[in-house]
Length: 373
Picture 1 (cartoon, rainbow, N blue to C red):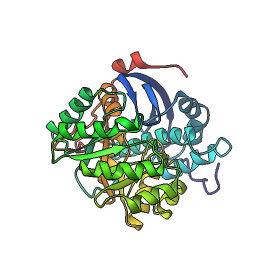
Picture 2: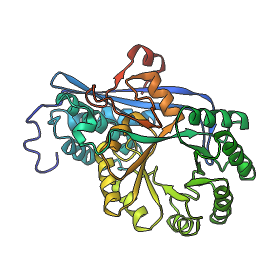
Picture 3: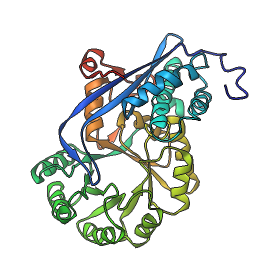
Picture 4: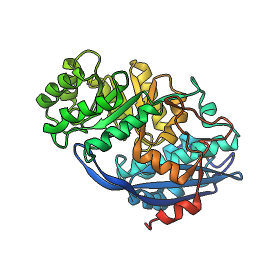
């Protein structure tokens, strides 16, 4: 137990940490510039204390569920449910010899989100209210347009989002660079001249490829170029940020697992917009710290995927500009969780009539997708 924790069991002690895993097939072949997948695994945590149960989850592998069961549950049980940052520090200490980035960070994230949800439920407050809202809704962008999609499916998906009132959309590029300009042109035709168009290469391009494509995509009205080169290539990202056409933001950060990663990106001047994912970077506790980093620069923050989690903290962070309404995660959250916030007017609006994140597991619906770990 870390030093200074003699009072950790006072208050409302955490009684139980339960963990489940669900693997849901995609509704079609999916790929981006550097990866392909046919299913997504949600690791879900239920944290109980004081007659309430909080829900948290992460999109990761079943190894994270085993880590929660074998290492993190005991690290937080008995601690005060109202002292979430203290629980976070206890979990960080518990993975010292396992390594913080990667699976351990996503496991901490699922527990941390559940603990924030639990605290808000104990106080009978929406999480956005508990955190201190600066806005009542956070804009979103529709995200999908996978490189495995036909032109027809690409156009239908992006066009439907715009027709439904989402004013900005993102598509994947980079698997077949020779086809990318045609695909981006087709996307622009589908969404019309006024909708925002974002492109995401997932680090597939070389620096010179990315520089050339930046000009071509800007000519088609693209205003966001995500990971034009590898997010590990800080010099390359800085080069793109300096050389990209005016009006085109360079974005990266979704693979950040700790605060030091984000600080390195910012110190390198690598991005116009920093991305962070609470389900990867250690949960809401660390996500709020990333928001403080952005506020200190100042720099804009965009939440990566997991819209049902990010809606509340993004309403409490002045630096946040939008949440990625990612096709896979939005679909899974609607399938497995009652209360997943629907887009309205191109934004997510936390339901202030429900405590915490406002989510409940649809147990009977989720059971068919449960997997062992």
